[in-house]
Amino acid sequence: MLAACLRVCWTDLSTDPWPGVAVPAAAVLACYRTLTGRPDDATRSWAVGALRRLNDTAWITITSGPDVAARGGRARLGDLSKAYVQLGPRCAAWPADSHAQLRELMRRMPAPPPAEGSELEQVPMPVPVSGYRQDGPPDLDDLLSPFDERRRAELVAAFMVVEHVAEPVHEARFAALRDPALRRTLADMLARRGRTLIQRRDTWISGYRDGVPSDDSRLSEGERAVLTLVLIHSVAIPRSEGLLSEDTWLSPYPVPVEELRKRTLLPIGELDTALRTLRHAGLLTQIKGADEVSGGYVPGPQFHRLTQAARARLQEELILAAGPQTPLAIAIRSRRTATTRGSE
Image (cartoon, rainbow, N blue to C red; front, side, top):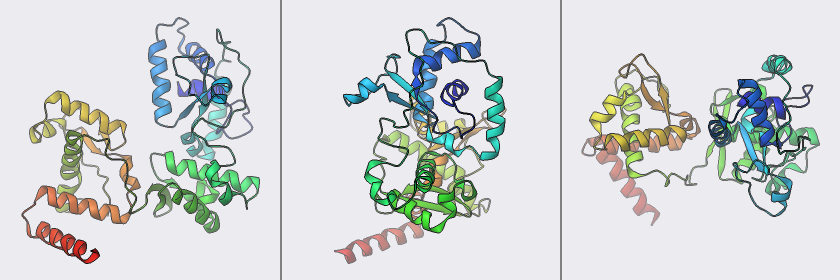
């Protein structure tokens, strides 16, 4: 499905793939049917689901048609006459040296056929419904206005990549990450959204600024419990055994599902639902193995977005959860109580 989106939206192969142009969703589905050799609608429901998943993970952006956007509405993906598809910001993270291979792949792919019931003229529409424009989000115009068109494009590209990419991106790939002056402006753009730039060696990603609460209230108590179990068994315990030396909450030591089932009181159905929710949110990653013993779950890519202060707070919370009566936990509670009294 991503190949079909790229084939239809990347019309000028002399330029970079992203942002491309917006085309009717029906055109993407028609191209998909050609690529898979299934001219019927037997796989249509799966294909629409794939479009939704690509949209949720920022590989593509589902926008409203011009008539719906003019009324301030949003198109439902099932209404193919009004839904449009555009390449998402994660496509901007493709390294430049891969573009030649992508171009060759696009040339070898068959031309997309006309989509039934849909006009196929390509609509230059780099403005998703979310409000991003090629020259920048509207509330950031004052930060972008001092720069020329090329610099604005570099800043917007870096802004969208660090916000949507799963793994930290190397600074060599984006001028706005290499140049200190542009990087300061990028940091100001992120600060407007309560975000901050996080550096790890020569790579960058965005995260919540310290003091700005993240929207973690969407997690249920059971989902938080499962996430805590994974962090304890895949990070905290290996670190206490000297297996993890870096200051990170990522780990190569997966927790088997069977171990999670033994350590939680959640019914198996609720556990599976919690694992699926946490995986879709990027908080967990499933590692496949030959069996359940060798495979399991580790912290997901969202943990790249923790600041140093947030990592320290998370470590304290796990100490309080795993050993509430230990001397270290008592010292943490005492320090927090003293800090609270001092602030009053």
